Image (tube, rainbow, N blue to C red; front, side, top):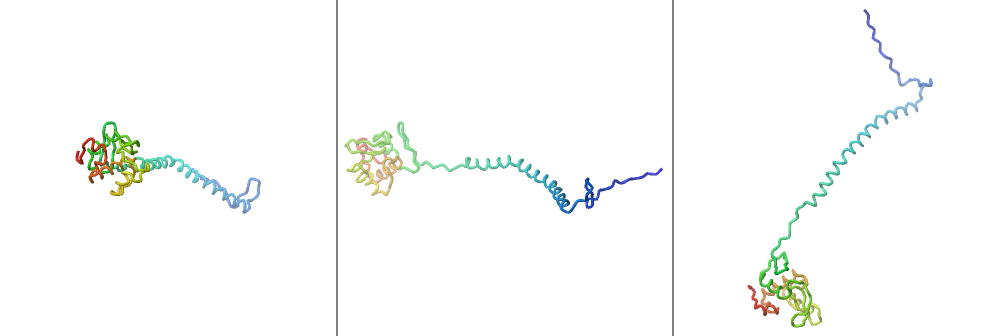
Length: 192
């Protein structure tokens, strides 16, 4: 028995004949090669776009986590040194107050913790929770606040509760407590 193996014929591309019977010229050969390259490169572009498409959810997730990291950053809270309070009022202060109990009594007597501007018992307009007298021209010029500010170096406003408490603490520590009418009425002393 004899076995015959036949090989299929391979078409020769260089000199191949088109179906219409003509040999392709150089331009047609170049266009054919370009088309084959484009066909090969298309799957690469498609793969890259596909990978980009698949990576978008991960990129979005990473951006979200990084953006929210700022929201969850723990900030150091302001240390409260002193809390001064009375019935229905209170003030948290970022500094230590030496005469806390005395100032609480003064605030309760002078304004009941309300930050107001009104005529005092002597008819002079006064400002803030500790009722600092205004000056003769109804301004801070020549006022109790201005006098204390020049002597202490403390600035601010009597209408700002923290400033007023800081100034009063300084004044009491320097023997100026009796300048308040309520000091005398309640017979207060620096340690009371």
